[in-house]
Length: 148
Image (tube, rainbow, N blue to C red):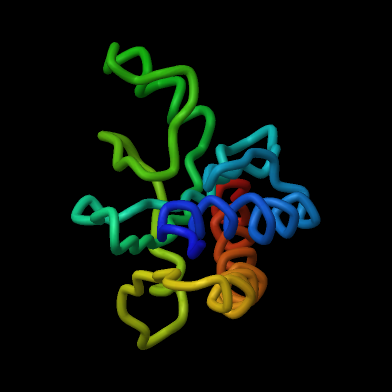
């Protein structure tokens, strides 16, 4: 029996992405990953398309760096903010957030899809390559700005 797109997405995250993120020192699962840091919340979060159906599933990936001091100040001003930010939200504070695909100069937004079991390895390879090449460099650059 063929897996649904939702089942394939869970398999992609659980069997391919989460182990690769742990190798890169990120914590988390199910498409929500954070890199432990004293100065900032460093987040990589998978965001499903709001228009997904039972037959189609698309997702994109957000990369965020939010200074912990900025978050604490914002929490005092905005009571609706939780203990820590999530990677798929934009908040009323000074924060850096980009779509993974848009970190490559000249690239537009990208939504990935998984349609069959054979897609999982190639989709995960593309994502992890982009994280290694683009996201980790952008995170490093943002962290350098925080410590200036």
